[in-house]
Image 1: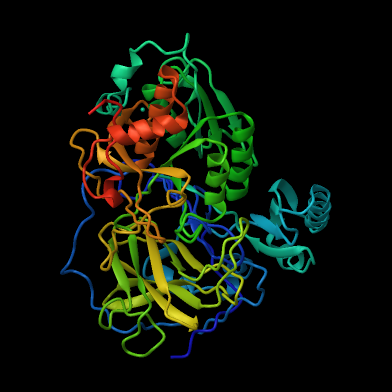
Image 2: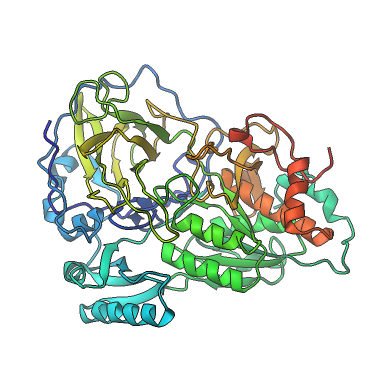
Length: 599
């Protein structure tokens, strides 16, 4: 079939998943993309963009399994005449915001009860401008070039917020973005990559044996008071917990453009409670961010502060090749190269994930998941938001700053099932012409009725059948076609990260959502598993689920042993590895469940 041509326009959905409690909708997704024409769609509390970040608040129990209730999957219908966005220098999703008039027929969708999860932004939007200047260039050259781009931004009515090397984050009028893209030093304009987040004493303290260590006299007089940072999205309510659930004093720093440490986000506070439960004698740092650019600056600062351990309960999707490289993994590498322990959530996407090689048994341009099925469907309850993220194995070489890019071009389509038919809701069709990332993303939409949604994949211009990978956000049932293996978030795949899976604090059973390895280059992950479903003051009794709760247990364990023993962090890693409780498959549990007790 002729590949739909994509018009230079139209989609919105800068999405916000504000459901941060015990419903299967991930409380916040920060897991877990970044760069050139890559439509790495990533939800953020306020905006959907190229990266997906997940916190970890899930209620127990597997997703519903509905094997006999999937609607029939006839060939895809209702395909519009779409055309690729004309500018290679503007992210596809951003082009759709600039030209909403060419978007899917919203009146038609509203007629059946389907709506975008957020409104079109006002006259200005937060964007990241990528400069031609190589980050490795001399400092003076980088400064002059960045200053020139900043002057152009301000001349076109924009407002500078923050920068990191060749990335400038700013507020920009929608009407001026195309003019800004004409600048000779501007290589790409995109929405910021946004992460999502993946407390009363945690039951994990006793489960891991940390309580026994807490009563042991330190090897050093007064202990070492290790510096542990919780790097997260926000710390609402932390002030009221100082001296009780948190130390009497903590070091705080916001790297958000608005300097808001408590943006209606309690996730980081709950993680900090667990760190303090595990390691009472701690010099605790609470540091937050909301975009990729802000995180880069936050990590640089934590390194300068001499922080020894980072607890990171966040993940990103479409932010790298799954082999431990990419901009977010580069932050981990930078920290690990300086001896910092990075305790990272493995992710909560085990039952939100599918991967497989492109195949079209019927000879058209659409991928067949099985037989003639061209839609991977899943059930969603009414008013729950749906989004999705596609990437494929054509990233090119990572040079420490960017990937070589893809010349295999696939597109991504979202459908909803109503009255016996599949209706097209949205699509993502960015260019892959050799330098762009191999990613597409769609989000977020909801319906006012319970029904099936589904994602389809088509090829536009390809030289081979690539291995495809989908992450779905918002499914209330298993995907019709799903892949538990390889569902790690980013940067859990980084060699320098100690990725942590989630096991029940009482039974040691692996929680169904806990992401699994291996990495795309065949390494076993996660590295450890640790308790989840624990109690915190922030979330309540046994209500903090997800690998977000597991990671701070590991960070706190490192701090506790650093406080009590003469050993280096490298030595402590080996000790914890030797004491982990073996539970089975390394790609489910890592080396085992965290334990500080001798076997």
